Structure formats: C-alpha cells, structure tokens
Amino acid sequence: MTNVAFGSVNPLSSQTDANATLNYSCTNSANQTRYATVCFSIGDGAQGGGNANPRRMQDGSANSLYFQLFQNASRTTVWGSTFFGVNTPVEVDLTFARRATVTGSATMYGRVVNGQTTAVPGAYQDQFNGNHTALTINEGSSSPPGSCSTSILSQFPFTVNATVSSQCAVSASTLDFGTVGLLTANTDNTSALTVQCANGVAYQVGLDNGQHATGTTRRLQGPGGFVTYELYRNATRTQRWGTTLNSDTVAGTGSGGNQGLTVYGRVPGQTTPSAGTYNDTITVTVTY
Image 1 (cartoon, helix red, strand yellow):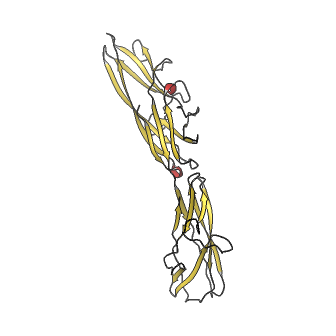
Image 2 (cartoon, rainbow, N blue to C red):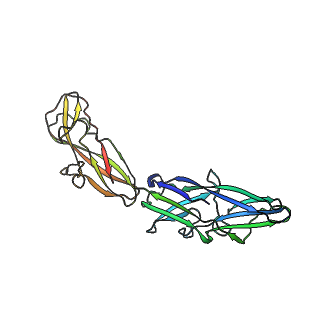
Image 3 (cartoon, one colour):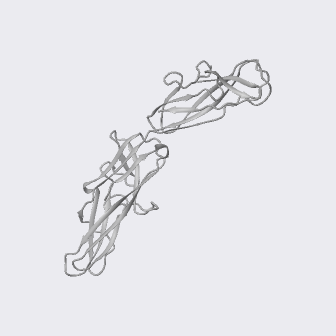
C-alpha cells in the first residue's frame, strides 16, 4: 500500500481528498486449480486511539484531525477490517490455475472530514503498521468462498499524513452614516467585521486609509468634494484604527470559529458640502 498524503489542509474548509494504491501478487504453487477469497483489512492505526468511523490522525501534541478511508470513489463504503471497527474489508475472489500467479490492485480513497474548523495547525499522521493491517486468505474447494478468514498471514504497512495550515478569512459590513443635514456636530455609526482564523493562530486586523485620503486623514468623496471621517477601535472613539502592527491594529487569537469586531466610525463637525452621496472604500488586512 502506498502512503496517503493529504498535503495541506485548510481548517476553515477542511475536506481534502487523496488516494493510495494497494498492489498484490498471489501465487499458486500446486499442480491443481485453487480458489480463494483474499481479504485486506485496515484498523485504526497507531495514532487512531480506537476511532474507526471516522479515523483519527494526531500531531506531536496529541491534537486530533479526523479522516476516513474508503473502497469506492464516491467515498460511501469504508475500507474497514474483519478484526476491528467497521467490518468492511476489501474482499477479492481469485481463481488460480496450477502454478499460476495472479496480480491486481485496489485504489483506496481517503478524505479528511469537513467542518474541523478548530483543528490546530501542524503536521498530523496515523501509522498503519503491525496488526493495524491484515491480509487473510480463505480457500475453497471448488470456488472462492466469498468470506474472510480470521487467520492473519501478512501485513501491508502505510502512513496517512496531512499538514493543517494557518488560515484566516475576513468579511465586513458597510458602515453607513445615514442621511445627514448640516455637519455641525459629530455623526457616529458602526459596522461589523467578522474574522475566522485557525485555532490558536495569532492575528492582527488593520484598516487602510481608504481611496481618497489626504495623508492619514480619511475622506468620503461626493459631488461637493470631500467629507472627512475617521474609524476607531473603541466605542469612545479615542483609538484610531490603522495598519501599523502592534500599534493601531486590533489583535486576537483564532478559535476556528467566527469572531466579531466592531468598527466605530465618526464624521466630525465640519463645513457642509453640497448635497449628494459620499463614499469611500476601506481595505481590511488580516496579518497572521
């Protein structure tokens, strides 16, 4: 059996597929035709901890990443074991002419289970060595019996591995100051940011100065020119929200789930330009 190498797994969308191949060669050393059902069983693996459906990989700190191994491309029939868990080993019925060799192969279809947003970034594996795999042969007198023997004759060791990557995603709602008359006083409103980062990943969220800034002064643009405004990290609007790491950004640690942040906006009192719609576009950057 070749190894199952899932490669990089994004915990925010963890379903990842990979295949492996089992190659076998069976020889009849007798002078008469023989019949057998050959069965290939796969258990839970050295890091599986008794998990059969789904199976389990672990990293060096015993964090878990769940996966499954299947017999078919649609990934509906588990490749299981006569001796453990899901009792669905791969069965091959063979007829051997005298002193003949029969060769063949079977594809194993692996899948990392979706929805594992709390998976911790790092390298994971499950080693299928020793009695975690089993080859059995059940002979019949006139035809393959179609059932598995319980006598283990050999093993076919392999390893399943994956690397959970550090990932973040962000989305934002519109900050709408609404319909304003004369800009004689502060006009405040808020908008929401949603950050989703892999479990344990430290991140910082920054907001740029927009498309119409002059220096570090943010501005909305409209038919009458510009309206200055500002974005803040706190409700009292004393901490400007910028892009300088470890200074005016907002820091957090990912949980794998959505984490909400509030953007506090303010249009200060100023000379009122002509009527119309004024807008700007802010770019949100997540550094991790």
